[in-house]
Length: 350
Image 1 (cartoon, rainbow, N blue to C red):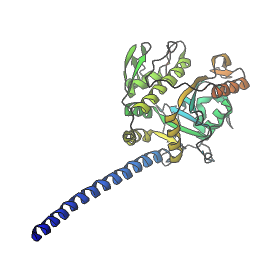
Image 2 (image 1 turned 90 degrees about the vertical axis):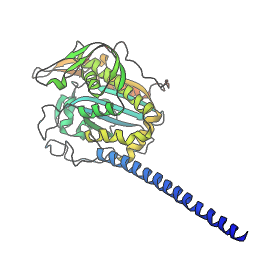
Image 3 (image 1 turned 30 degrees about the vertical axis):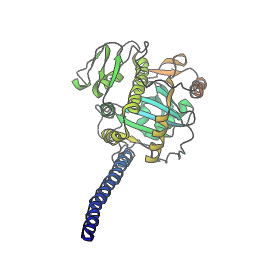
Image 4 (image 1 turned 45 degrees about the vertical axis):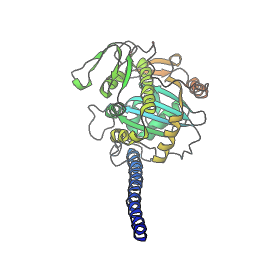
């Protein structure tokens, strides 16, 4: 009997050892995976702020002094200038004019996001460079662009995000494309730009990948040109944001970031990005408006004969912006992908 007891004790000890080692290995794998996961995200976010390959690095016209943006505590409203550029035909060292300019205003207290899309032909004073179309502000650097937009809207612009066509394509593809109602046939072809920039979409509900989505938001070759294009861009970006929030698990985030970061530059720090992501996931879209609104814009002709968009009253424009920001609390809506509104039936691009 004693030998049998000793054998049992030995066997029990030998069974415990592999179990403990297995648990230890699993724990190490989990910890290692978590470290790798968050390191990957941190690296990808940080690369957006890397100025080593900045498109503004070698441009002589860019802001000489580039002050750090104010520290954001994550509780006060923050305004971000989003600029999409068309870099076709731009020489090395040159900065393309912005094809799209939007301002996203996030209020973490109200959990509300307001979006303003600025008509690119709006004629405004650009600090130290006279009056020009607002889409040319970026060629003097991101800080000049932010100051120009801040002066126009009457609100501080703390951050900017700068991307090109490829960044938009990669973002849409990274979320798996979107199902969307194209409100009419959209066709535009040009020999000068090459077939890769042709626009050829048919009316109807369909799946849009990155390339088709870019065609949709670029189209402006109809009677109302940039007016309904900006409306369409706001509506489409909301759908992309909705899908990102609804279908993207945290596990997929590193892959999405790796797809888009090579095409994005921003002055947001990694910590600010984390804070903004938290605000964005908990917020709903409030106002979504065109700048200047139809009742405040006027068509003008510059001294060289160019057609531009003027503003009837700068004070009323700023009041309009404040009214939009202070507007009623957004009502949470079911997590469904909305169709475009019936009045979004025009638009275009280069």
